[in-house]
Every structure is written in C-alpha cells, then in structure tokens.
Image 1 (cartoon, rainbow, N blue to C red):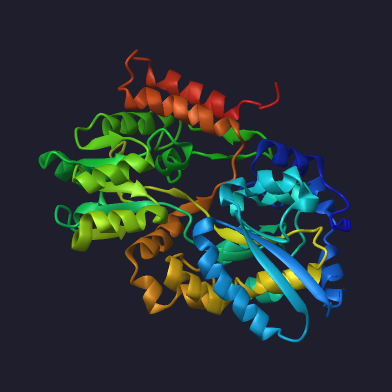
Image 2: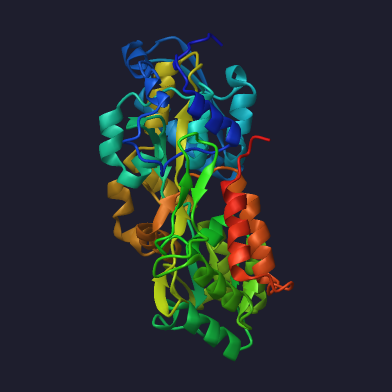
Length: 432
C-alpha cells in the first residue's frame, strides 16, 4: 500500500497511552498538552481526494458473527454507487478485542476499515493508524453525544460510531424478583438467599468493581501522561470514605445470596436455575433469555447500602465504531463505505438482525429498541456510567483487592490497609 502519513506529530503522552493500552477520557481537557499538536489535516486530504472510477479493492475486519449482516450493507453500498467504480470488497474475520494488536502489528497490511471498541481509539491514533472522519459535523450530529465523545480526541472525530451497548446492567428473573425488588441490591440479595438462589457478578474484574466506587464522590481517573492513574479511594474524609465502600463490599461478597464468578459461569447458573439475577452485558442477552424464558427481565443497576446511605451503582460504558486505515490505497472510498455501514438505516438493520444497540440518535430512540430489555437497560444505566479510560496498573490491583474481599478478608487485614494497598496499586507507575 502507498504510505500516506496522516498524523504528522504525535505527543509523547499520547504515544505513551498506546503503549499502556488505553486512552484518556477523564482528564481535564482544559489542561492543554502537547497532544493537541496532532495534525488532523488528513480530514481535508481525504475530502479533497477524488473518488476513483477504476478498480477499488477494500477489506473490512469484523467479528465473525457480524459477517452476514455486514454483507447486506456492502451489497447495498455497491448498488448505491453502481457505475462509479469497480468494487471488490471483502470481509475478513478479526475479533474486536484484537483490533489494536492486529492493526498496529502491520498497519500497511491491515484492513482498510476495521471494527473496534472505543478504549482502543487513542492507541490507534498514536500509532498513526486512523484517518479522521471526513464528514465530521454530519456524523457528530447523527450520533449520541457520548458515542461521539468516545470516538473523538480533542473534539476531532477519528472513527464512525455504530453501537452504544457495550456496558453492563442487571439481569433478573421476574418469577422471583419484582420491579420494586430490583431497585436495591439489599432486597435482591435477600430474595436470592430466601430462595437458596444467587445474584452473580464478576466481582474481581476492575470493569465491574468500578460500579461500587463511581457514585461515592471518591476520585479516580487517568493522568495527563496517559499511562498512570490518580485515585483517592482510600480517602479518610467525606461522607463516604474508602473503608465505607470496603465494608459494603465485604458484606455483599459474604452474603449467602451472592456469588462472585466469571460472566460465563453466570450464564451456566442461570440455565441451571441457581442464579436469579446477574450483573453482565448485552452479549449474554440471548442465552439468559433462553434460560429464563418469559421470566427474563433487565434493568439498570440497583442502589447499594454504603455507610447507611443508598448509592446508585455506577458503571463503565462503551461504544463500538469503525475506523478507516490511514494507509488505505482507496482512502476516499474507504470513508464512504465506513460512513455507509454506520448510517441510520444500517444501524437499524444491525439492531434488527444482531440485536446491537444503535448509537444513531434516531435509531436508538425507536420504539423497537426500547422494547428490548437488555438494550433498554444498558441505555438507562448509561446515565450513571463513564467511559473506560484507565491506565494498566488499575486492573491487577482491583483483582487482588476483590479476591481478598471475596474470600472474606481471611487474614483480617485492617480495611484501611486494604484500601491503601489498592490505591497504591492503582496509582503505581507502569514504568519499572
């Protein structure tokens, strides 16, 4: 492929973010860093490039399960632009979780268009892999503000959003739990224990563990270096202190109605009838609905008791998007196709055939979307969520802490010491 370098200056902090494997959403944009010197003239380059009329070969990377649905979109694209070029568009399998690795491993041989989760955006920008969206205003106005934010860096849009459902919420079996019951975690656990059943959660995953800290007033986020975190979850001041959350987590983890286990185990226990509730995401919707049948329900996360208060559980939320390879030999057509497969009509098609929640404003507001319990739940929960923008040291620290809590704090370590250790781990430099 021809080399068309679209990002001429990469900030040290942004490049470091790519090495850390995550980006920075929660830092204060008013704090101007060198990253703002990134040259986004690629947008104009792509807009000025004439659409070629000869042979146009494009490759698209998506999850295997999405291929039949995407093929319909490509077929309609060819019909729309029939006669303008000789299209040869192929779809190849690539897991979304592996997009960053696959693209940055060999940018010149990567697909022209690729699907990815939002937390890989900054790494791909830093690696010079993404060509900024051409019709920025149009795409921004068509999609949910949070989806646009997730696909942007300093207000420049670098990818085309297409789903808004990559978060988590509560599944529950309405044969046991009422709409009133699921408002509080206390009541869910009580009902589960009374019926010798369980509420399931992947407790030792930092992705889920954040839900207990997000609405406490305690602070957490990534630093301006794009690598390390700041965190005061061990604070001894304020109405909610770090040990208050730790005490609540210990009470939850040791409750007879609770089980700490991986996502896959929740599905298995829902199928066996052992679980009547679980905190998970839309990827398990079909399996859970099959397990519970007409008793299948979903809603936002409940509140939980912390220091005598009822706190709404928070969440990390996420979006999926298509990026355009900055080194595409047919850049203008690649942007045309990426825009096409993420437009309103195709987001509706994706929802109808794949049950994926749209990021398009019109599509997301449809009655049909609102009637799907899992999608309605993740959209409702999103008001209490934040984008996942964390440094790598966060994950292992959370796992170690949660494993100790889930085991009932067997060494009887003082809670403040546990919180101090957690925060030291989260805040640790990843550079040894």
